[in-house]
Image 1 (cartoon, chains in turn yellow, cyan, purple):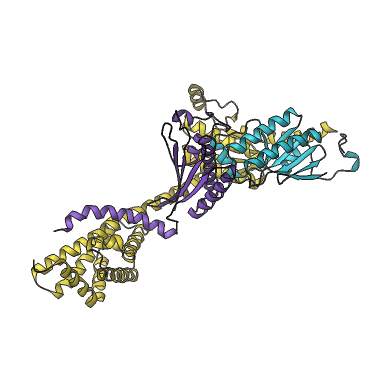
Image 2: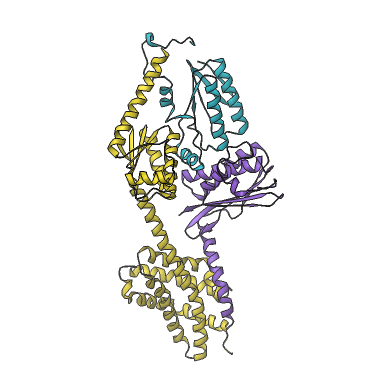
Length: 294
Length: 136
Length: 162
């Protein structure tokens, strides 16, 4: 082979040096031409991306990093690819848009090389080089895209957890958490954290955990309830569990789960009545204790 | 009312109640010294109540938990009721997850609630109503 | 083409470097910290070091408390049952998350029955018997390796979403 890979690399560098702006323009236009691209990324943002990525690409090609390792090892280039994919993921783009972004760069770059040479062997080897270079960028961009979407999902599920476990103040020194849905480990942790902080803030003496909206109580759920009750008690407050339906009572009995140390009520109203009584008792007990000493 | 520091932890006497607290930088030796000092003081001062403020503790591991439980039992044997007050929310959560309930240990939201439970009131009373139990 | 052979290999490198980058971005130390567990004073020093490490990772206050408590349990365990040892603090990363990993090594007699040791209430020493099982519940990942007559290694990791 008379035309080497090193020569092909020089060819790409040459094309980039001579026509950075043209390649950049062409790339932006190719992306804008895609139907799915509308409203995802603006033209000026595309332009910024293109300038950043092409600049980084040129500098990394001028270094002595092997072509197939350029994207993996060159930090600015990696960052440019990651930024590009993250932006698409966060703006709610379809996965195709992200992969097409890198694919259309290939096209723009090949066109530029084509303007430099017409030799078919040269073109072929250069095309292979460009492919190897940008396929790496393509996989990285896809990885980043998926990661970006996962980040959004994680954030949303956290937000959902927060809003689905509100702590409300029902009475002076009485708080309540209405639980809806299942009670897994993560959920229990969020409920506990919110509840304990509210207890401290309001100096609450009783916390009601209402499980009317919890479909089933199994051993794990019961354990999580016990954990919550224990944490509330460690803070120095009492805990009442309300909303235990007959079917749930049956399950608890059949599973042999011991909730005997926990104060339970069938309805939230009953629980509130019990809670108010407890707060009265607390103050009465205090005075009684004082009386006793006199 | 008198204060005497031992193991860096002062124990105050307010009538028949001993008021003390644990500091965050607890090593095992300090915990042991504190337990000894407190039980000695319960007997010497004929205390009927002990309030331990733990609002400064940033963690409670099983060693400190066990000490608090033992202290409560010992104090009860000596005729005093112990209230542990002011546990921080993250500490309470972590203890509950560890599976430590501090069985037998009475808790209060803060020192004020704990002292009230031990028969102390924040509002000043007319002199005629000062409890007269012989310890003053 | 010579490139084809290297293709699969560099793919793997790419993924590793990605996680490496995430660590670089938040400025986590790449070198582990190793502390000795030889005295009761060391336990206090370990709590300090682990607290600092949780701040570096950016854990919530509740997670900080969980990790420091777990470290205290594990270190005490190594001190009482293992005749002392070392604790290593590392900062592992994975896509979308950074973490804190504690590796506690002791040269004690080893644990004969790991399942029993992880059961609440099981104790052969002065603790409450909640040490290992409790620490396991406070961390996301937990592994015990024991060598008959050759000590025990406990590895425990907690992740923080970013």
